[in-house]
Image 1 (cartoon, protein in one colour):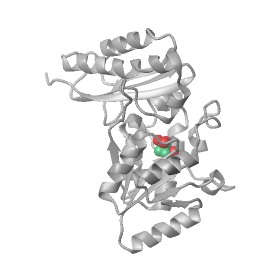
Image 2: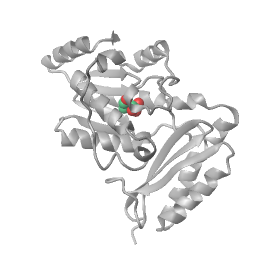
Image 3: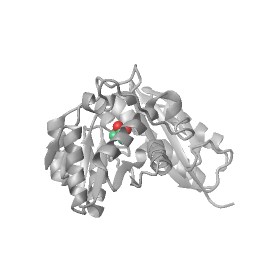
Length: 284
Ligand code: PAF
């Protein structure tokens, strides 16, 4: 596995690969890899000649009071995991290389980035789309891989790629979970003891929501109330939002019909976790 740590060398490498007629699959990450990331690599390997994994903790997608400084980092461990998963190139640029002095260009997807996490993390998706657009420009992938856990992120990136004619296939892969259902996330590292046990309630409440919808519940407020009541039984929890939205436009639905995205963000102690399920409602 090659480790490339400058934008210039990554661009040269990608140019060479494309000249050879080979395809590139990109797995963008912020490192501290887990099985969710590795499932993206596995999918990328099936459909591409070369798999590039970027590891970059992107400062501009964190708010001033968020965990940029504490975000878990362990390049040695990540390289080991990436190598054994079959990644061909790890791209590990510095923040100065990505955002040199005088950097002034940002990408903003309107509408989709507004609600859900966009409401409580202003500027977050602007940071995500900006860095992902840059990674697309540097790596020039044919396809890029994201996890369904970050459903809003995936929707926003898909929209960006479509609106800006980036000609990159955006693939979204299922959420990978721990044995108790907790969605794999680098931030799970912050959890321990009771908090870690409490965190399992997120997926349990989503499964309960799924059952209610499958049984015919059409009122989103009733389902949201059930989810919130379940989460509130855990002492370490504080709900940011629970929403039931149309998976296409991410707007709240008035009645549950067709597929809906049931999404939530909950603090367990100081750790903000997100999760979601897409549920196909019974036809009336
Ligand atoms: O999902 C992530 O890890 C990040 O938001 C991403 C897509 C790598 C952009 O920094």
